[in-house]
Amino acid sequence: MLKGLALTPPVLGRISIGKVVEKNGKRLPEKDDQFTITSQVQGKDGWLLHPLNDELRQDKDDKLRSIPIRLLFNEPELNFRADYTLFDRQSGRPLCVGNGEKCKRATPNGMQSLPCPSPDACPLAKGGACKPYGRLNVAIGDDDPLGSFVFRTTGFNSIRTLAARLHYFQAVSGNRLACLPLELRLRGKSTRQSHGTPIFYLDLTVRDGMNMAEALLTANELDAQRQASGFDQAALDEAAQRGFGNGAFEDSEEDAGAIAEEFYAAEETASPAINNPQSPVKASLAEKLDAQAQRHTSSIIQGVQHAPAQNDGQ
Image 1 (cartoon, rainbow, N blue to C red):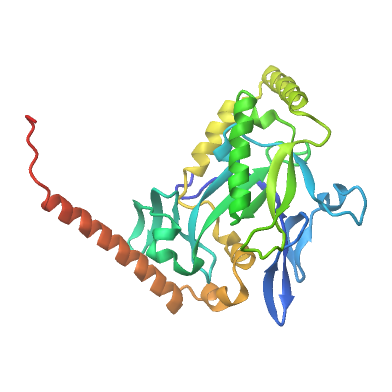
Image 2 (image 1 turned 120 degrees about the vertical axis):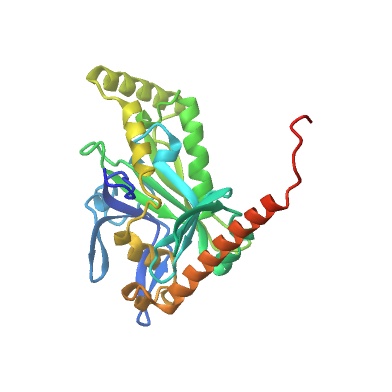
């Protein structure tokens, strides 16, 4: 296995709430009030739609606001990974990933493990460069039980709701999360920050037309069928855990441009930094990261040198 390369679930397509549109010569992210399912192929007008995008609509003109899905794993954190991520705004590549306690940070001296104070208290996170960033992998249909569609979000409402639902469903199903018949559902809310304009986020529920008891019975039946056929869910979860842990950062360089385009405005994702890795902006950010790591190391050393001697008899 190649070290340093995170092995993530095979992706067949993307799920998004919104799209990227061109306005006044700039490509800008635009929110929407429905799901869009795309392939992994981009054309001149954006991502090409996946056939499921139309198949799941009851009528051609209906808005897609729910998607029947299954999860690949029983462990919530394998289906949905969420962390604080400091992005390079020009390339879209992650430079620092943390959970509010610890982080992995790319510096000129290599990958380092450092404390993570969260974006509110981190001096490097000013200007919104560090965001809560979640990735959800789900299976749609039964054609490929190990293939998935990925939903990426920096929305706190989606991240909090998905994390809570996954842990609740795992608990009530007796750790049969991968067998539950579930549904992605679009919900809207208004906040003071949105000035009364609805914002939309992702929720996870049992499938339409089923109650919780029926969903649990279906999960138990599917789990029994899988065990009888030799399907080893525990081994699959373990393999996925090893794959995620094989690399420092989950997203590949191939996805960097799409991430930058989707989550940052055009003026924040200028193309010269993508084409020129030695751009002044990128070098400056790298220097800041390295300087903070050095300051942290120095403070630890000074603390050890000035610490009072301990008495083993106390």
